[in-house]
Length: 628
Image 1: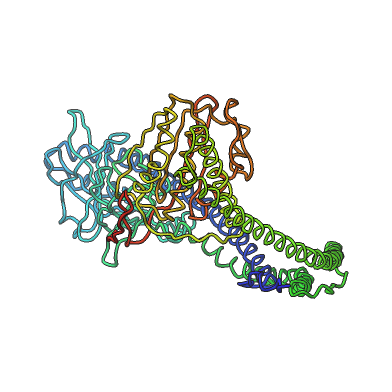
Image 2: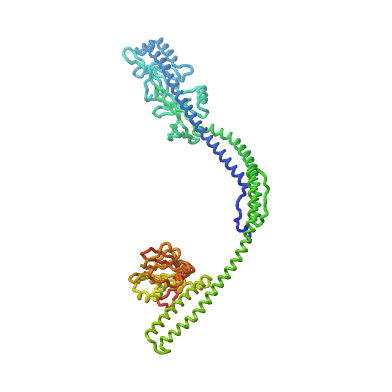
């Protein structure tokens, strides 16, 4: 008996003992990695929301603080504008020196010690300077104030403008006398944030946050300490927040910005933070958490390796024992120990091994018995084939002698014959031919059954074969009064088959169709192609075959009487031999029939696959090899 281990596919790849811990470690890594990433994502989102809210609060707080300081400044300017000395000086062309001294003292009071005012002036209605206090050097720059927003008590602030590397703005308050507006108090102020304010902003917004001021129309940007900046470029939104891009000598930096307008002024407070700083906190947390995750992964992998080894070691023992059984060693057994499930598996394996050993023993006994029976059957089949061949030979000899004697009698060599005698001799010849045909069928069937029939397979013309078969059955068709039609195939249509065997099949089909078709009926033969096969259809208009008998029509020694008025003829081998011949040539024979509508037998034959083919003339008088 062949070694079963040779038939089993050889195992490839990593063993389960190594693969299982790796797979479990991979799952653990995926779980930990997914958890860390999800946690980082949620923390980052929460951090961004918190940072955005904090920066928005800082922006609004600074705008409110700046706006709330305006009434205090407005009160100082109002008191100065209503001072009697100021009104007397502006009402006369030559104010007294004492009023000028009082006015300078009053203008000096408008600048507090921590204030950023650098120049305060008192001007007449026509713009002429009356007096001023402050740094003389600052008086050189007097640009246009630009748009002025009117504040409470007629205090107005101009837009920011840059001069000498600093940013300034003007605060103005009109002076009104009995005859209307007689002058104006104007103070040029400079942005200058104390260090304490910067620390407080850093505490509230973060060390990377920066506070900027700009005009409402975006014409001038400045830092909180009064350093002018180029206007940034808007860059859309980032997670619901406005973004800008600052272009400096060190490169471009994209920031998120939160803006709040300052009430009663033409200014806007902007608090910005680099986009990279939004997730700085979560990244720091992630960097701290990754080493802990790595340690957990290593510990988990070690534990999983120990668990996997405990699970796979019994399986390795079972595998070794199974391979031993596959090699034919049916004495293999495993120790029944370990966990409950492993112990049950071991016990089941031992029981299976015992059953296989017993079954193998019975199989050998059955194989020996089957071998003996097969040898006996082959001997009986050989004896049957030999008997049929011998009987066919012995029967054909006297039948041929009968044919010879009837020919002599018909020729009149034994004396003249009467009409009755000639009629009897004709009956004898028909019976002789009939018996000889039966013997030929039995002989061919026995040769097919013993696989001793020789086939000459080549590429031949199907049209030539059909024409030859047609010429042999034409007298029978004509004598019965049946309409016959052949839908001619193309002369170039070739089949890869045995010429004589194919012709024998077609003759059998045409003879059967003629036999079971009533006079006045029709028999038609046609051909078609289906991919690499050729289909030959023989159709009759007979009574048809019952559906329950379609499966038996090709069985040996089975005769189906399709017409009750016709006696059975033959031994029931014609269709059996035809189908066996077709299948032996790589084709098939099948039937399609319906009671009352006739039958169609379909012969399938393969088409040529090579380039060298043989074309046969309809008369079979020559053979020519042509290039296909």
